[in-house]
Length: 134
Picture 1: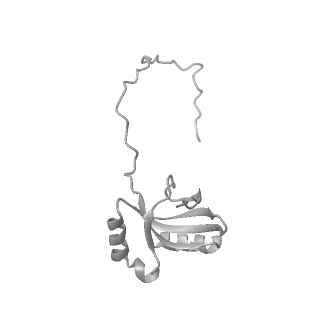
Picture 2 (picture 1 turned 60 degrees about the vertical axis):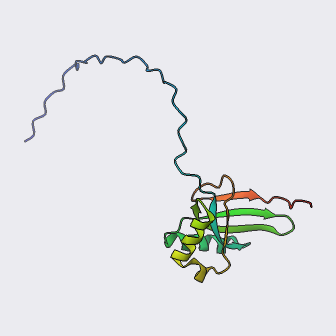
Picture 3 (picture 1 turned 180 degrees about the vertical axis):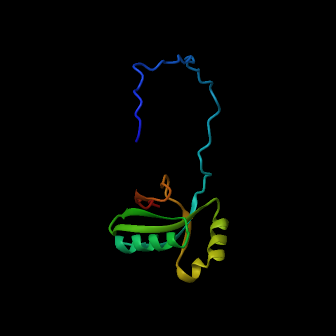
């Protein structure tokens, strides 16, 4: 048999000393959480979004830091560019290609500067720049 005890009519409260709000002291600007890495390896470009997403998924399952850029090319339509990595230099990107055997699978790879503001691990949409008149 279980005995149930009655609850007290009121529970005493213990006052808690309130701290005055602290003023924030100005601090130096905090650097962004990631280091600037403006280079990536473009391994594919296709107009077929399904192929682009499948390629992206395959690269991620092989532990590559892969992302995709959707771009409108004047007169050519919408293209999906698939990239691997974020590197501090072109040399670092090429070393990665060599070390991971990327050239054997994607012989037409291109090391290029990444689209400005491309969010990590996501799809970005970037309008193409018109060619400069000479």
